[in-house]
Every structure is written in structure tokens, then in C-alpha cells.
Length: 263
Ligand code: PEP
Image (cartoon, rainbow, N blue to C red; front, side, top):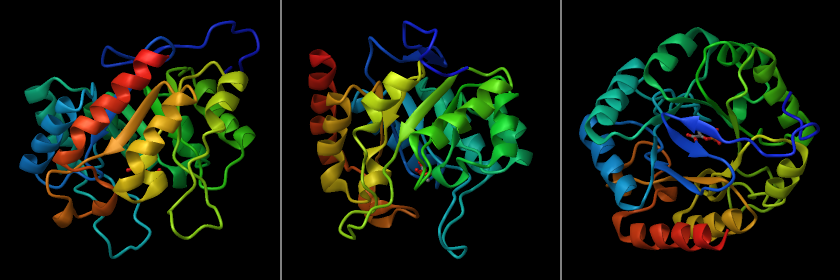
């Protein structure tokens, strides 16, 4: 269903009216985690200042440590809905458990499946049945074939509004958290008609690499870039070191504009 065979054109997916796909370069930005109404609204205003047309933010957070902040859950979804009402930005947020799909879909414009759940087949089937676009992040060690077959689980349930997100794979290099696989962009475009985007923030784990990697992904042909930003990264409850600050927004906006003009 998602194979490029029998599709001469790549697909454009609409998220709350915002297109992701060929012919457009979309910026998705926001905090790693929803922490408070004020922090989420400020982050959304920063996202708008950088030219973003979609807001990201986690209410259910898949943390490596069970002792780390796990997200605000349903309260986080309500905050995201309020911020959408105030700013007009459609929302992308993660769902981690099949039993939460309905509540997340009631608030989100696009449901995110995180890297750790890429092969959670029950969850994939559940988001495939809910009638909202889905962002499927690549598993930490997933091959292109495994990733595309995971997308096929969603498509099989009748939902072809799927965006694939390259977010870095496990590598031998400890200096960066994960290795952004830029090859995934043209490879996926040759194998599937679905849009492919990059998340340099979760790949790098450090803010100084985010804009260079965003440029690399867009230069390779990514349809969108998703980045973390935060009004006060030093006190962020999740992944502060990778969040862009206010000072970096002009550079982010100009990188996205320049790469969009070049495509
Ligand atoms: C995220 O985008 O909030 C996230 C946790 O990403 P990943 O699943 O890629 O680690």
C-alpha cells in the first residue's frame, strides 16, 4: 500500500490543513515535553517566530529511565489543545499505548509513534483505525524494510496519511546520541510514496548540531524538519541540551527558508 510501485507521484499529507510532501518544506517545532501552559504557549510563539506551521510537544513521554519525567498525560493534551486554540498551530503529539489512542486522537492533529514503538504492531493497528494522520518515527536499529513494513501495518487499517520520520540510528560514536541517516531520505523516496521528514534534535541530542543536520536533511530532499525548542532549556524537564533557544530562531528560520528556496 505504501510502496512507490504503482505511484508515479509522491503523496502530500495534510495535517490540520498544513501540507507535508513534495513541493513544500514544512517546519514542525515545539518543546520536547509539555510542562506548563505558559512554557507550551511560549514555545509555540517561538515556533511561529521561526516559521513553523505545526507545533510538536509530548504529553506522554517515553523516557529511558522510569524515574525521569514521564509527561503530563491527558493534562498535557489539554494544554496543547488550548495552545492550538490560541495560536492556530495544529498539533503533533506522541501516543505510547493503544489504550490512549482515542484520547490522544481527540486532541491531536497528527499522532506520533516514537522510535521505541515502531514495531508495536497493536499500537500501529490502533492508530491506523483512528482517522488521523500518523508520524512514524524510525526505530533505533530498524532497516528501511522494517520501517516501511511498520507503516504498512497502519496503511492496512485504511489510513494512508502517514509521514515517515528519520530521527537517527544507533551508532558506535558516543559523541552524538544517534546518527542522522541522511541516506534514508532519498532511499525512502525511492521505495515509498509517503512523505519523509527528519528530526535532527533527537538524532544529535545537542543543540549545536541541530541546524547543520536540519540543513543536511533538507538538502537530501526531506519534506519537513521537526526540531525541539524551549523558552528556558536550562530548566527543561526533558532533553534541554538539544532544545534550540530564542537566539537560534533566526538561524533556524533562515536555514529552512534557504533550503526551501533551493528545492
Ligand atoms: C520525541 O519526538 O519526543 C521522541 C521521544 O522522539 P524519539 O521517539 O525519536 O526518541
